[in-house]
Image 1 (cartoon, one colour):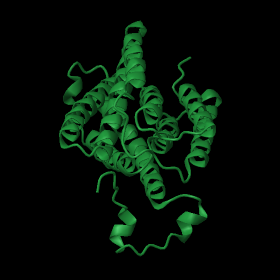
Image 2 (tube, one colour; image 1 turned 135 degrees about the horizontal axis):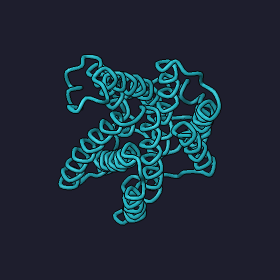
Image 3 (tube, helix red, strand yellow; image 1 turned 180 degrees about the horizontal axis):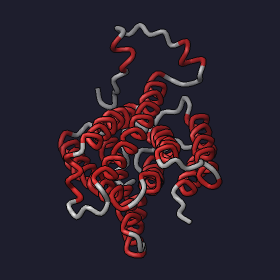
Length: 287
């Protein structure tokens, strides 16, 4: 039983799965299911971010009691949509590759930027339009690179060193940022990266004590990321805050995918991730 993974589609159908469509795509059932869940999560997360921003607008940015946003129904609708997207995202991470799920989830940045342009009645031109296009292109490159690939059975005991050092460097850089919204966004990205890694460790480790530690780290880091991104929403637009947080989270998680989980990430996937990162930066660019 050591190292086994539950094949969800096969288990639901008694082991008799028509894999024709999956094989035609050059992708197994687990990557296919994780892809669908990641896409659904991206749509729900974009909807949730936009509704939460509207909730903060209804509450008023000048209101000294900023956390009275808890009384705004629109904000709660955003929370529910984000909760659905989060469930889809972390379920995709549980059964799929980090190097596939994280870049695909970057689509919610492009979708949020598009929604925010409509809510603010702004034309989607220039850098943001290019950013949305680059995110979509980068995701397609990652899909091409990761199709049909599988990860190592168990995470490396020493693989946390590189992403840990990069995370510490990013945390130190927060002190150099002048805008509070930027500091909250980077902090949120670091916390969400930690939650993604902890969640994947729970999925892959067979040691009960390690699962408990990973669960505690996941709960603490996800809660921290949620609170920080709410603070960022109150002080800046959802598009910019989301873009910064997602860029930080994706970069660190991609490094962890290689060094910690032993995922085979080809050059085209790194190229796709870089394109997504550039697109995210353009979406979040403030002139």
